[in-house]
Amino acid sequence: MGLRRPAPEFWNQFKTDYAPGTHVRIHPLLDWTELNVWEYIDREKIPTVSLYYNHGDGKRYRSLGCYPCTFPIDSESRTTGEIIEELRSGKLRNVAERSGRAQDKDDGGGLETLRREGYM
Image (cartoon, rainbow, N blue to C red):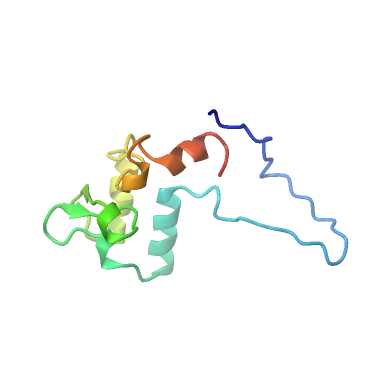
């Protein structure tokens, strides 16, 4: 079964003339990369779960899910700044953000595939 390609979205063109009472859905973070998210977290000093950081064993989580189906990646990053540096370095360029999730192992990152195909 193939994936249906949706119509292209023109994110830089916004319709702003709506009738009163019209329901409008806006997804401002949809185009953010993992790097964009970590830069925002760092800039705004947003508290995060400690599992995202290495605690001396050379591993950290990139994506969190339930205990039996989420796995850490090899990483020395202990702070948001170090995660940002790691992402900028390209070290994780060929590793899908959700590749540590068991449900995304078959295709290297199910949601990543959907994102590439234009579903997100």
